[in-house]
Length: 286
Image: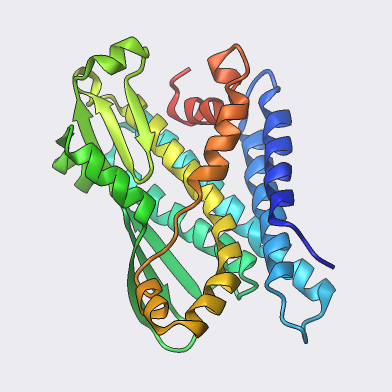
């Protein structure tokens, strides 16, 4: 039985589109959304990456259960962002980041058809730090090229907020460009980065809103495991690519995220966009 990765995207779009029509957001709805998306992608990824000698039913159960577990953990990380915003406590941002990294790692393991504990990672800006526990403990540093390009571009035009970056674990910049006024915005999340409007850069609500957008990017990273088999084939045929790919993680999560965002922006109400509504919900920025 063959599965087209595009089916995953269609499921995501359908689920998010339906979800965004709700009149209000609640923890129970967010809980269902996060675990269902984790379970769906985990199941499809596990089937794609199933070994010939593995049973279909066992693979199905493993992918769905581990994907749901990872989805629940990422849901809790988003709730911590809300707590950090309400208490204005920087320490909670790091706790949320670590928990989100754990949840995303479990979802990726589910889609790779691996046991949930075998591989972990955390993203900091354009850097991905992996912890491999499958054979023996190993740490691997990888660059995420899309986030790197954005970081270079942003750094050349804005001010790097070193203290806020240390406090949150996210690359944060500030700018007083008129573009913020023209677009009636006070912050924006780019791949691996956040840019805050200078007069509003100390707003916990704005910062939390944009961090949730980074977490939404992470939600789509589960789809990147679909590149695993093609990359392994390329690496086995070319030693140069094999060496290069040891230090690169292809962060293509922004493509499905932006497609969903664009589709949702057809709604007249800004917060009818599911991705904005979720960010606003956890950041109290409605």
